[in-house]
Image 1 (cartoon, rainbow, N blue to C red):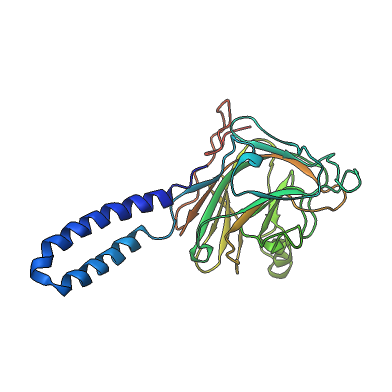
Image 2: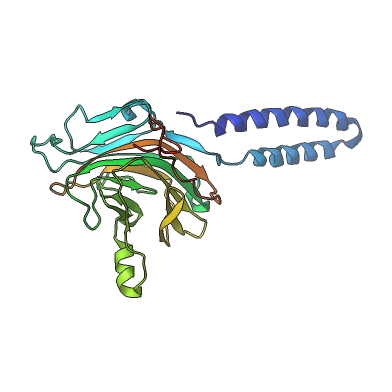
Length: 288
């Protein structure tokens, strides 16, 4: 993993502090107390320039087992060892046939991973990742999915499933959409074309980009094209992905590449994924 912004901030602060010290020494004989005021003000301004972490940060490394990566936690009822592997560029997770630890029964497996991210999600952000669905045992239902991605979620320690469910993106073999099926209900009310986006999620790795602005408007781009949208996003700086339901048979197998989070997102969506590289890197996504 590399969260480099904090290191860059220290380097910037150290450099500017050194320059401020030189300025202060040059002015002390003539400016007296003004030197102190100028120095403190300059330090404040220059420290502010470093700001909170905002540059792109890789929060998931697809080439490394998630169990070996820092800051990730798991919500699961599955016996170990978990069916999680990497091929050097992406992680593959599977809950189809996984056994519950409580009774060694299958079909009710839960296994999803989550972590906090060092950003202020209320001021806007983007998340980009590549994902390929291999198989869905049963498709999602309202509020539940065997393959999902949370762009913002509460700590699941108390309810195991996370939430709000409307901020969960489900992945079926033939469609993606919001976990609360807002798009379907809105489609009935307004007769517009906002239903879940139908697509083949199994044909190859696709690049998914979630952007949320400072007004709480969320948009999902697939290979650079806008496919989903919703309002009133709750900016919780915690993300997650996997199988979040113990509903019978709602399980899945999928692969996911690097996850890149950027604060203050006001950028264009990622470019369409190329189709022909032999080994699919995580970003940008190739055919798989």
